[in-house]
Image (cartoon, rainbow, N blue to C red):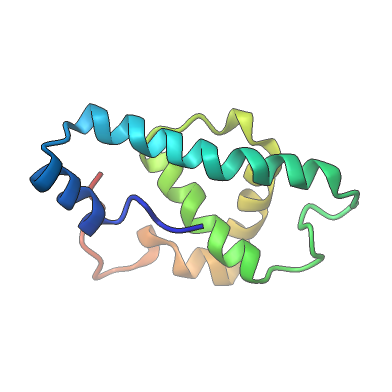
Length: 113
């Protein structure tokens, strides 16, 4: 999962492609679907009683949580991704993830879309 919505990429699209905010949002939504759809399907095929597919937080969750945060920031409807949303909610409740969240950073500039 790459962060296609990082500020450098979005600014490049605005400056060099003349992309409007609507076009950027449409592109980002398509990118999220291309990533989240197969992840959600794969998670559906994994039989586990634990909300975390691998038993405890690891690289998958470390990479997933920021992408879900950004998807929400861009207004992506996460109802299509119940397993990804459950993993995200579980992780965000853990101290390590809560402490690392953008809103928990006292000196961080406000997030831009």
